[in-house]
Length: 325
Image (cartoon, rainbow, N blue to C red):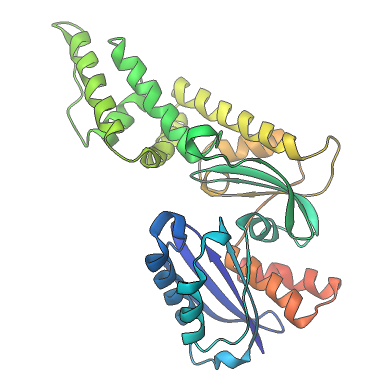
C-alpha cells in the first residue's frame, strides 16, 4: 500500500508516492497548481501532470491515503479537480490542507511549534497538531507580507527610484535595479554636463516601467538585494536588516515569549542564499530549522493517517521522507 503527498504552489506542483516503510516509490514535478494564480483549468492540468509522474507503473487502487497542501486550498474547484483525480484511477479521497501545516511538517516531526514562510509573500503561524491555530501577516502585497520577496523587491525599486530622482547615481543596488527593469539601458556616466538631469529622467523611466507590470513582478528584484549586500552596498544591507526585523516581529505575534518549541523557516527568502535568512535565524535563536521537501511533508502526514504509525516510527521516518534520503 502507498500514500500520496502533494505540495501545490504558485510556481510548481510536486507529488510524492511512498510506501508504508517511508520509501519513495514515485515523484512528479510540474508547473504551478494554485488556482488563484493560474485559474482552475491550468492548475488542475499541472497537478494532474505531477500526479501521473508520481504513479509510474503503480496500481492507483493501492493508494490508501493522500494529503494535498496548498495555500487557499478551498479555492480548488472540485467540479474540475474531482474528475481529474478519478481519471487517475485513485479511489481514496484526498485531504486538502493549507500550506502552513505542510511547511511546518517539512521541518520537524514535532506536533506543535511555529512556522515562518517568506517567499513572494510572508506569513507566520502557531501550529498545533499540524494545523495553524494563530496566524500573523499573510495579508498580501498591498496590505502586508512584510519582509517578503515582494517587499524586498519593492524596497529595492523604491530606493533606486529615490536616488535617481535626487540626481544621484546611487550604488550597486541602484545599478542592478536599473539593469533589471530597463533591460540593460545604458547608465549615465560622469558628474557634469547635465548628468543629474539624466538621472532624474532615468528615474521617470524606471517608475513607468515598474508600474506598467503586475505588482508581484517586483519580487524578482529580491535577489538583487542579496547581490548588492554581498558587495557591501549600504542601502541593500539596510533593506535586508529591516526585512529580518519585520519577519521576526511577525513571528513574535504568534509565538509566546520563552517558547522552546521549534521554529520552521520556509520559502526562498529564508532558505535560499542571501543575508535575510541568516539574520532571521540569529535573531530567533537556536530553535530554528529549515523546511525540507513540502511534498515529502504531505506524504508523511498522509502516512501517519493511513498507516497509523506510532510516534516513534513517525519521528524515525520523518527525516527520510522529508529529506529524500
